[in-house]
Image (tube, rainbow, N blue to C red; front, side, top):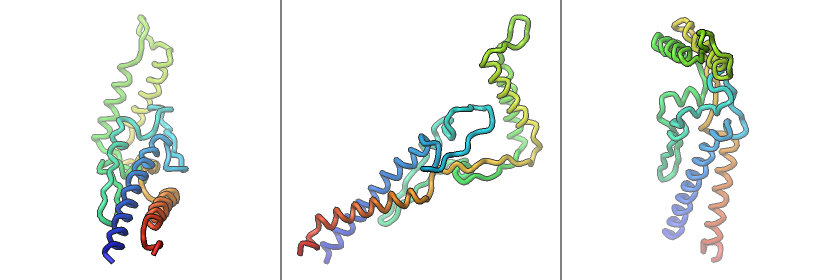
Length: 187
């Protein structure tokens, strides 16, 4: 009986290991897909980083996904404080500190404008982009303390039909390998 139990424990470890590897790769690919499997993330409305990938400013969020496994379970998680609001969506309240940051970004954007010798703004693409960026930060800075900013749901981690399908395929593959290699059926 211990031979069968040892074989099953080995099969379960193999299943958990394969799930860990495959799901880690899939969750990482969500950042490349710019969506959670087939569900695309909502695009930005602000002119800041327009056209650039979502949720990849520094790559910290993408690299923060961790996996913890026990003898019979796997848990994927991230410990970044802002990960939950991006993954689940929601609202955040504007604080005085946020307003100060918005003003800082506004003045930073304004200082980068290209100017002609007479002091007027150049009309090149960079200056036009910076003008809209500065306007965005100004609007954010003028929001009242306590007002809400809605963060759309951009899920990158969690359960879904695609995750379940992949896990079932891994389990079936590993169990069929176990039974094909096992002496149980041959006896």
